[in-house]
Image 1 (spheres, rainbow, N blue to C red):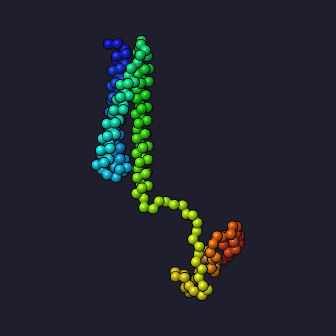
Image 2 (image 1 turned 90 degrees about the vertical axis):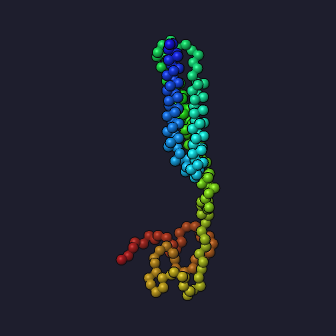
Length: 180
């Protein structure tokens, strides 16, 4: 047989073998991911089977289209160079298809989870105003008859509305050292 025919035979054997190996690995390990994405086992298995069939069709179609080599192959080294180029392209196509599938399914999963969320996450817009209490009344949960907690809140009612910018008396840290 001619060197070019051997190159084609090796190219087909390696490419088909790689395609079958990658498809089985993705099918076996990707089923868990698909079950998470679709949240239904039967649907995940059906999509997994369809993805495997599409994977075979695309990859084997590319392998057969890329097999043609119009230049004559005069030596074994030229055949090896062409073979490595063709197998490298097959591997790049396999990787690109894999990452496209993972990207598309991950995006579908995010959209599905966003639709299932009961309360979408919202950033806080502002603060609620403090309710003032008349002097002499006590709030529920206050510390009756005991020591009052120390903190950043001044004594007395807080005015409703926006707070002025800058430091405020009795609020926040002070420059005085703690006393004992």
